[in-house]
Length: 219
Length: 219
DNA sequence: GTCAATTGTATCTAAAATGTATCAAAAGGG
DNA sequence: CCCTTTTGATACATTTTAGATACAATTGAC
Image 1 (tube, rainbow over the protein chains, first blue to last red):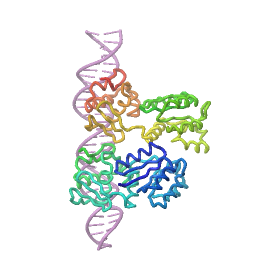
Image 2: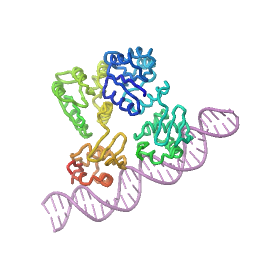
Image 3: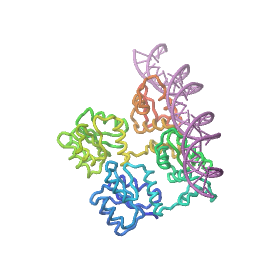
Image 4: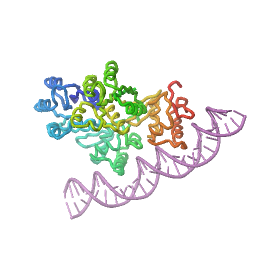
């Protein structure tokens, strides 16, 4: 079981993060200030620490210095207003950073990246009779290899990681293509089309008119 | 029901804000100076406080210090002239700030962002056996997916957010179509008609002759 | 460089959603 | 009860969005 420590003083945000990571199968511990965090880190190990910079008592940077020798990856969480050059420079000490307010999918994606980089995340995903190994970059249906291209695999993995959630075109473009969605390109549609053909997902891979796509459990 | 406290001494502005937030389904309380605000905050909780900095009696900053431990998000409202660096620095204690004169849409957008960040603008709406998830853009009746188009979903969400309140045609056009109601078009009627068919709301979705429509709990 | 696989673009078609026109039906006022 | 106003219903036109196809560009292996 992968353990994640969430150090965030704003409870609603902390809860939001814990809820979503919990849904992904991670085990989360929430603390609300730097001292609590330091105490826990004394006696426990975590696979990842999500760390808000603006904290009561102990500053996020100090805490980072404290965590560094413990060899745990850290993702900074920072408010947009606080993202000046000084912050940018310092956050480089962390594995990654996320700017508040953030998209949940973005958070999940970054957490996944860091965990995979540290070889900690389960690289197995599954949906119905389809299995994906994100590390080996392979996919199978009923054990039979599916011949998916890298982009197709990425897209399918994103959809599976967000079963029953509508993924908007904009989000998908940002996540997979790492770019804005200009609104007049059929690239995503084309990949969805290819996925449908190759995976035989049929009605499970639903088009949400005017929004995006959604993989549905119930279909 | 989401409750918002508006602390603003200029009544016309306060009314403008209350009117628009009310149309979005938020419940607003208006107070006109800092003391009143402090009194109310003593015994009530709000999901969001909109706070004018220039207030009679109690200064907005003092009030912010007072609110902080109550863990309610605050959006500052400030006149352009007052927006010097000092103010900018101080407003960082708040979730966000809006500069007067502001666009109503901007206000609504920022309020929405903050509420969502605090996970308070629940994306779940329900009426009887119908559930709407405004984020995932889905609607279900008794758990069975309802196949609603984007406009239909918007309209249904608006009606549900205003259960037992008569929505005038003009209001609905302004909210959903973002335009004036010319008076000689059957567009809204048509959408209501389609909603009635798809949702099976029957008598609950009432026509208010000469005014508009109303969704009724009691039916 | 050549080739094949992958990815993206252009363009057309299909489908879905939305809106208009028209007329019938219902509601309300005198 | 009749007339006016307002709403409901139907058909259809328009607009928007997604799917399909062909093909061009790019990448990477050899």
